[in-house]
Image 1: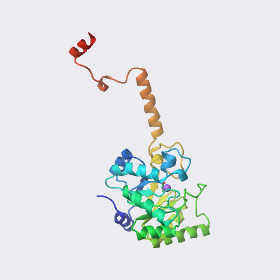
Image 2: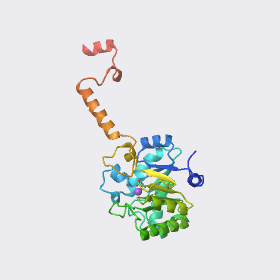
Image 3: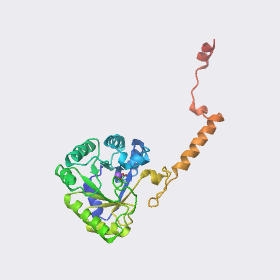
Image 4: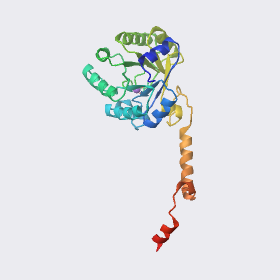
Length: 268
Ligand code: KIV
Ligand code: NA
């Protein structure tokens, strides 16, 4: 059954963890759906992880739509979240138009960073499910530093979280904040929180799929590597190269023969 907003709200009510992971392509989507991921994030992290961009600000609506369409084709059950990229929600009208575009290509909700009151109001008025994103906001924060470390900063994030909930978001991503602040916000809200680098007490966790699979060269302390795709990939490619050089590939099982009579005729 396709997961929906109610499924995610019920998970929080029943104190079950929400499992989220980013995804950028069709084949990975098939696997993640099969593995039972609750929420698939087609995030603007696609820029640095897949497209070779410098940072998130280079990601466009067209980029998100392209990857969203691929992911959508692979999903039967997971809930699909799509990021509104940098500069795509500068006015409520622009945000609405871009959100409708993401929804029309298979997103079950859109996510936007910060306390954009007028934008959130407008999207909710048009019944678009909205996920918030507080703490580190990669689209506008130049330094990837922990947020909410001082008392006043922490209070500001709590206030923004409560305001977003009042405005009608159904879920909130908390990125790179102290564990204690993640816990306080999670307790104060009725909607689920999804943490990334924000400790153990958020209602769910999200990570970048490239990080958990060990595809990405960089090491992110707050992520965990569950597989070493870099090493596996390089080993496989080296073995492939050796097999070609040593005439091991293609082998008998990888090729086709002609009937002898036809070959004799061709050789005449
Ligand atoms: O872009 C992204 O993938 C995200 C999540 C990791 C929170 O915003
Ligand atoms: Na993002």
